Length: 228
Image 1 (cartoon, rainbow, N blue to C red):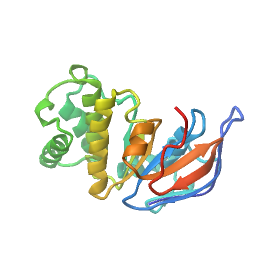
Image 2: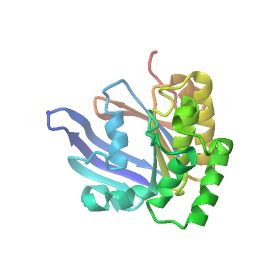
Image 3: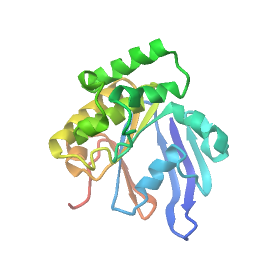
């Protein structure tokens, strides 16, 4: 599903964010990406959905070589990827239903299909009853659930979650994790950058640890591995 070969990323200011990354993530895996602040986790995540482009090396996602992907094709590539952000990135003037439906309208799906699928994913995240509300009328956890619904409405092969519980209280964080677990059990690959040691140590999955732009640990059913 995702493969990086000798991936190197250097920013214009001279900072080397990733250095010789080599990794394979298979279809259906759930992978945590951990490491200290500034280690290169966000760059790692952003390169998977081509928010950032590798300076050197190849990144393959679902058979597409991102190093050779033209900028004009990036929006089409992203239709295969669901992205969940720490700060939700919902459109404030649209209702819950409209925020999720927007992702399907972009690909010109039929209105009947949009309504059916949007209500389906809102039911999955437990927000079917709040479809007509605006984001400002929701709690942080509910907004993140809308964000997840939006990310999966087009049935992506992979969901990228960048600190999805970073702004949430512990109880709400577990609710979000339960939803991501459910999505994963249905066959979707999940790659999640996180600082939440309790979640990583409790819900065991593969752990990729990044320090100084390099992968220093890659363990099946690993633990968080850093002091609080």
